[in-house]
Image (cartoon, rainbow, N blue to C red):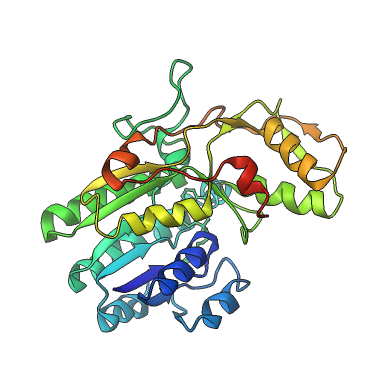
Length: 302
Ligand SMILES: NC(=O)c1ccc[n+]([C@@H]2O[C@H](COP(=O)([O-])OP(=O)(O)OC[C@H]3O[C@@H](n4cnc5c(N)ncnc54)[C@H](O)[C@@H]3O)[C@@H](O)[C@H]2O)c1
């Protein structure tokens, strides 16, 4: 298949690009490299072309038009929650206008569109009586990033209705794995990993009992592959359904690093969600996908 990967030089996108390439698909990456160039070598080494362009630009849309993809995997995004709070207009420009541009280019090319909303940021705080958000949950985003990602969902449906665009939305939990930069949503695994390696103290904000649903990047890539020919018109959660507290995560990572250092506790950060977990039963039903890698196994790959 001919596939475009926007954000293909990013953490998740680089793993997806490599995997698609190894499956024999023909790939074009569109990425402005605003998140850095550290993964460019990996992409270029397998012979995949990178168009260095902003998803909001004509150049990006034209690259899609001339490549004529059958599928567009849309991963490029402003994905720093704190930046979205400080500069919501910039977040909206990239995540709403950029997504609109890519949707329009995919519709013009007659390509399937695989969108990447954030299950963590879109649904809000997990209620005390729930063990995981399902896709029927009424979204309650608590940051401009969650809002812009949710807007992308609505635009997918709009393009589906108006232009007959076939789309699948994968609402990701907190993704972790090799090559992740210590920034953004699931940065905590990357941050702890780097600090433990450098024998620096790790900071935990609040009491460390706040939980997240950590899903391994290799499993996420398999979900994208499953979405190539299944799940049209659906939003599907991709996570594990397992809640892990920050303290528990630290304990596991410190043990693996052979560190006996205690974490440093600092005051809770305003607006931080206390509990996030996704119900992933729909992914099994619709995509035939389940997470295969436990947190203990995934952490050993770092
Ligand atoms: N990492 C997670 O835990 C997580 C969770 C939920 C959703 N997501 C979503 O998954 C996608 C990929 O996330 P990631 O963790 O790989 O992030 P990343 O920052 O590593 O990758 C994003 C890529 O997009 C590129 N990019 C940013 N703005 C761009 C623009 N205007 N034009 C072109 N390229 C641009 C960056 O250079 C980067 O290479 C994002 O859409 C993110 O919102 C990630």
